[in-house]
Amino acid sequence: MAPTPALTADQANARLHELTVIDVRTPGEYASGHLPGAHNIPLDHLDAALPALKTAADRGDLLIVCASGARSAQACRRLADQGIIAATLTGGTTAWTQLGHDTHRPAGTRTPWAMDRQVRLAAGSLVLAGLTAGRRRPAARWLSAGVAGGLVFSALTNTCGMAKILAKLPHNQPRATDLDDTLAALTG
Image 1 (cartoon, helix red, strand yellow):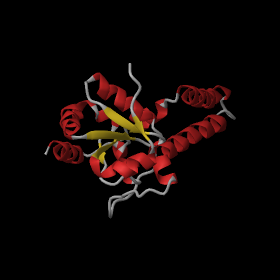
Image 2 (cartoon, one colour; image 1 turned 90 degrees about the vertical axis):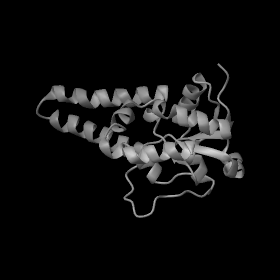
Image 3 (tube, helix red, strand yellow; image 1 turned 60 degrees about the vertical axis):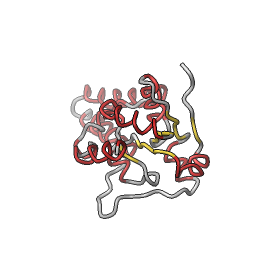
């Protein structure tokens, strides 16, 4: 398999006017700040968006974006399997904002927490619960050990099972109308 094409934040910024930007983060992450003109198609909805993405790719270059570049690289591989060539943003929106490039936020909307913050809250809460409950029931400490093991596995594999679970929560899901509007904008 050929390597996924990649653009640095500076390269993407220089070409932003000619790229169709697809942000594969959750709607909450997208709302916290995204590249100007980016369309939100969460990674777990990518398959439903394939026809619209094919149409968009036929009209010009696609840039796939996430927070760090891991999910966008995964999305690019899935698109390549369907014959759709797309580039990933090296370092994701984290690199983009660190270099001082502009981000947009929807006006008047409550900004949900970024996924990494949600994961830290959930993991920390579970560890504390396991340790607290372990004072009365020592076997409850296995909860803390399980979370710790999951975090180590997450770091080693650059995946996050907890993020995949949290992404399914209602506040991390796109409203059907939002996704429909995004797909219509890509095909229109």
